[in-house]
Image 1: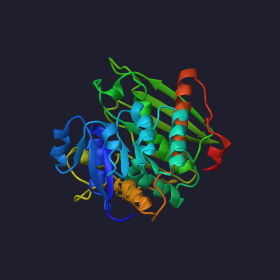
Image 2: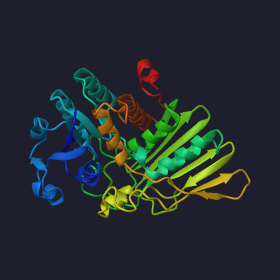
Image 3: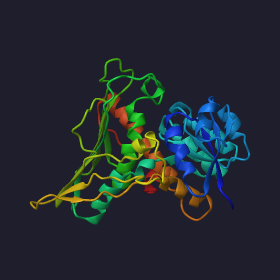
Image 4: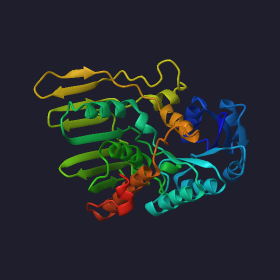
Amino acid sequence: MSGPIRVGLLGYGFAGKTFHAPLVAATEGLVLHAVASSDAAKVHADFPEVIVHHTPEALIADDTVDVVIVATPNDTHAPLAIAALDAGRHVVIDKPFALNLAQAREVVAKAQATGRLLQVFHNRRWDSDFLTIRAAIDSGVLGRVVHLESRIDRFRPQVRDRWREHATPGGGIWFDLGPHLIDQALQLFGLPDGVTVSLALQRDGAQTDDWAHAVLTYGERRVVLHAGMLVAGGSARFTVHGTTGSAVKQAADRQEAQLLSGMRPGDTGWGEDADPLVLYEGTAPARNIAATPGDQRGFYAALAAARHGEATPPVRPLEALAVMAVIEAGVISAREGRTVALPLTAQEREAW
């Protein structure tokens, strides 16, 4: 195909407005063509020329749309993705792309049957903190990694009236932040042997889990994933220990904060991270390594290249399926108090 790829966005809530719309608008080869929203004024305040459909179904039926982004509540992701695939659209789904593994497999099968691209928005692969840690691990300076701890902690003591914090399918911190933590771990180390998860409701008035702690087992290596809503400070984004050294990345990537402040992708300072990686090499004095800048436009740039047949898609569907397998194993583990193996088939495992 030639010309810009016309993108339709389902939903203009937090994910659609904060991430997808500005990233698409700032990516060469893509154009934000249409949005499905019940609040046209909200959309037009940011993108006056965009077509606004009042329902997801109307946007999906719009033959001028090539790629549909599903950025609606989690329990609608799979049904809307299947409808868009059936309509001949390529699809990007915000994480998590389904409520369970069976539903995820149904979406992947539909994409294969229709011959359409299916991508899950694992945008945190392009975060400065992850890129910096990955570079340190890949360099070999830490030796054989035996322990990695990855945390997304926030201080939000008040329970807010939004679907993510309701006792609804797909709600809770494990489904919200878990996919980010899990996808990064799988990118670094592949499929774990087992998953052990504990979930809790810690805030006054909490309706669903707002604290999650997971341990992924890789032989003797342990990967700890943690997210909490009552952390005012003091926790590092990444801590890694290896046979020849350790590394600590204290601060998180700034792109979300930049977007919320009104910065747009590509503006001066976009993705820059002033917080260095602190490297401890044996008994030598600690030294700082400058952080690698982040740029989540990388996801959509890769998507555009794939749509033009110039590159492979940024996220393989089986990678996203594996993230869902860890989420599902974690739900079982938290409920039954045991370590759970990933519920993947032999064929799904062989893809790794």
